[in-house]
Length: 148
Length: 148
DNA sequence: CGCGCTCTTGACGTTTACGTCAACGGAAGT
DNA sequence: ACTTCCGTTGACGTAAACGTCAAGAGCGCG
Image (cartoon, rainbow over all chains, first blue to last red; front, side):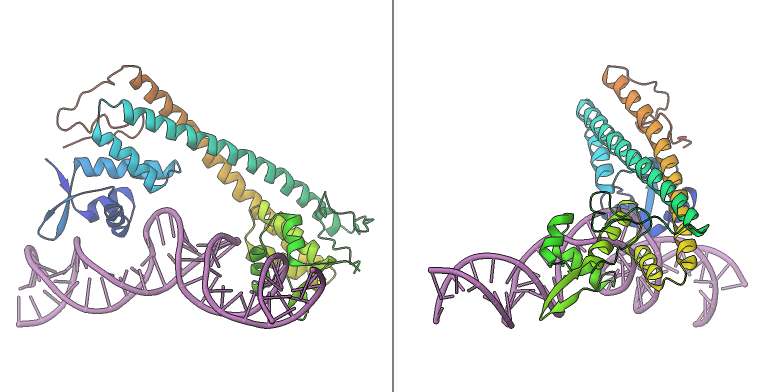
């Protein structure tokens, strides 16, 4: 059966050998040895692919490790599957929240940008606060009503 | 003129005193002193609000500091305004990329979730490889073309 | 005077996923 | 033998934004 050296996997997946060794330190990979050198079999190669995929999806190495470990246990897969599904759901929820936050920030940023553009165009920015900028918090003009 | 203690600002804005002192270390705030204690004036209070707003929008403290510093220079505001607009544009672009990444991850996650659901429901998922049992591995997309 | 409270200044700890040397080991090529 | 290459094991460094003590200082109260 085919095996791989660390540099082969490194090149194939576009990650540094350091990263691959790190995954081993973290017990996500357990290659065999030939003397001192690490030898990666298909199993390891697949696990590495899964690790990188997990990372792309935003899972932490710890989470990925748990999924892989459960996969190894293979107790009929029920445990692993439901765990993984739960993790996926969590991740989905988290990403949806993130997306909402981003939308929010984007609309504020666009509004702010527009406001600055106007100012650049010459408008002095209508200030009337006295100390009432509190809830709305100082529009986009950082106008620190110097009332001290 | 009204002033504030660190704990007042801390409570009002829901941040720890430690954070506020940190902003001072980073030179985003420069409260005056009364003996050893820090005294925050309106100016500082407004700047704190701006700092927190900047954070919500995803700017780093360094970026926020640069915007505030330029605001202080106030050289007719042209410099500050164009700098800030540029920063906003960068941030907008960055967020749009992030959002695209999230959409991508979300669709992969949903597909993966669906796949696992099916397996849980009993489907053995089409096997073909004969070697280990890594061929099937969480496929639906990252099937490590087991060519060994 | 002692108590409690707010405030201060260090200064090290935390998290995540590696990067970056340093120093060394064994095999292959010339 | 010498150099080149690939590989190895430490071990410290990095980034961001604070958290978490530790050890005092200063003040008002009873």
